[in-house]
Image 1 (cartoon, helix red, strand yellow):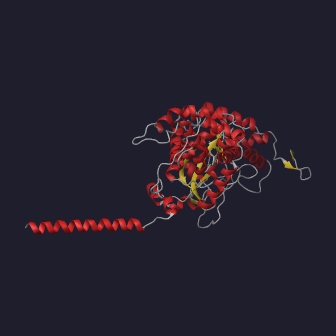
Image 2 (cartoon, helix red, strand yellow):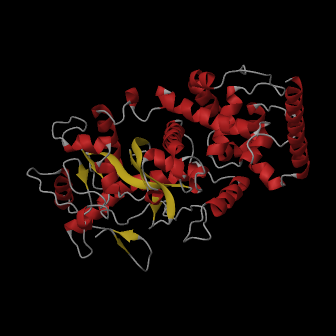
Length: 461
């Protein structure tokens, strides 16, 4: 009985020893290529800690000199003010003490993390940010998403007062007064200009689509030849975003995206008190005339008062397109496909919109052009990550002569996902604000300005 047990143990030990030898031989023979090492998460195999020197944000601004606003979209005073507002939330997101181990290169302070995040938002390459800030690639992405959550959690940076989703009646009066001063027709009942924009992303993964219960092809916008999500937004007379909804894939039409939003559902109920009486929003032909929406008069062969109304209506409505242009130009990552999970796109866009409003409220000068290195990074990532099956050479989003991102904003098949692709018919028993605006143009005798082809200047009839 004893000998069989000993023999069994010996055979087991020999088998384990044989497996260990085969494992060591496999480790010696298998050598990972450099490209596969880069695709692994974390450091390279066998690497040691990389010594880095943490930089001071004040020194970075000083080295930038006159190019501060080109790199950060704000000057050092505005940056410090933003950091003070975000400091309570940033302290919660980034704890100075690690859960385990130690930090050989020293802890990264919140100001340096905010600096890295804003440079990333502006279109900077993570590799350049690593060199300029003395941070690892992983720390940069941690700073980006931590700053995103901190901005969205800060009530002082909300789109409206009291962290409301839509402007209050007092705010609507202020916005209407601002539109009146900018309107040649003196429209005084406009509280928002609304439109939709495609947020360009890479093709969503199947795992994310299964979690959202939406197919991958639903995120593909054929008329733009891009994957993305449909951003519905409204702005005031200063191009500040005051309302936004980002929950629908890129294939969804603007009308359906707005009608199914929380704001659209509430406005359809006549008992709501969201908008002030006789006040309205302005939009393009993606909407239909309502008590709360004024749209252009459809048709190509219109003249007289209808043509004049369309001109002065467009003069106010184009504010949202200008806001989108400034928004995309200010944050360079929107000019290339966002290579992040589709689940992270809504909080990222909301963060950028709040920072966009902060820059306007801080009286930042006109958004300067991006840095040369940032421009190269934007174009390189757009060409490598933005190509689809139909587009082989994708390019970064550019702005036209009016400053509008035509690759993301523009007219299209607004009612393609409705019944029989037909425009909804509206029968209003009461007089809608759109008719009041048209009558105001007629009473003032306003006409569309004409262009003198010889002098090249607009003249009024």
